[in-house]
Image 1: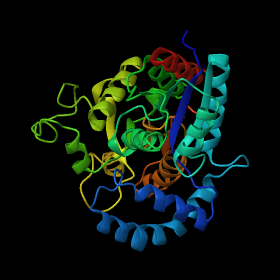
Image 2: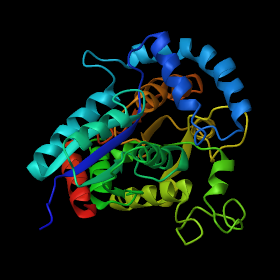
Image 3: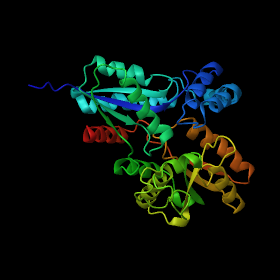
Image 4: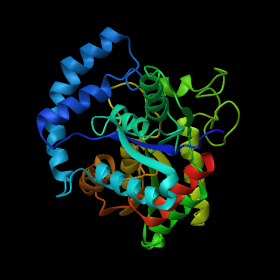
Amino acid sequence: MATNGKKGVLLVNLGTPDGPNRSAVYRYLKQFLLDPRVIDYPWLARNLLVRGIIAPFRSGSSSKLYKMLWTEEGSPLKVYGEKVAEGVQEILGGEYVVELAMRYQNPSIESAIKNLLRMQVSEIIVFPLFPQYASATTGSVHEEVMRILSRQDTIPNVKLVNSYFDNESMIDIFADNARQFSLDSYDHIIFSYHGLPQRQLRKGDFTGSHCLEKENCCQSLCLSNQFCYSAQCHATTRAIAEKLELRPEQFTTSFQSRLGPEAWAQPYTIKTIEKLAEQGAKRLLVFSPAFVADCLETIIEIGTEYQEEFEEMGGEKVDLVPSLNDDPRWIKAVAEMVAEWG
């Protein structure tokens, strides 16, 4: 008779430095940016760029931002992740073993997988905490999991969650979080997602004739762009906007956190803010639905840096819609998705 072992659940987010100091930030940036799925340059060019320029020069300025972000509990991304993992474990019960991991730094994917294997799980459900698929995020998590498991003599069943950009529970929570604001009091609403180089977006188009080749190529999902990060972001925007009964002219989908001079997914969030300021906008409301937990890119980049820049342009207020964080409804949604895929 077959033995029904426990099911392992691996919740994986991007990562965070071990501390808000320069050396910890340097280690994080180096590991993160040396990933060939993140900076997809040839090995030598990537190493020279990351080790010689980006990590040494950005670690100092980035550590100052992380000090602004850090709480008594630690990095919000990790703190929220731990609370979500604990909550999912409580909901799923003893038939599951839930582990939190970070793609970069700690707790590592390798240590989490070792913990699951020690518990003799019969399968592992890999759940990246990225609603929209991108090679640089979900793809990298999947590759790292398979790399680690490939060294094991015995490999359990593995299920890889690809995306859940249109999950109804997630959409409902984002919409409910926005309802704490008086939506009609804002001149415009921005849905700001982490950006990706256009070069990487094109790689997701198996046909080679759709991505950035057709007008409004990301405005609807089809077979050609089913794995397109930008198209999935636009789909998330449409779903939230529909819940809030927003008119098309009330909102814009844009992309932030551009690194380097090459073209990334557009429009850029900062350029969108500049354009709105030029048009006389005074109050903006910003979602960031690529992040299931508030972090440097939301709390600091949007909540602080964009606020300061908007004021310099003549604007008054940039309000940030809170992310899903450790909302009990989000924890329940994750548990339900895990159970469904498991």
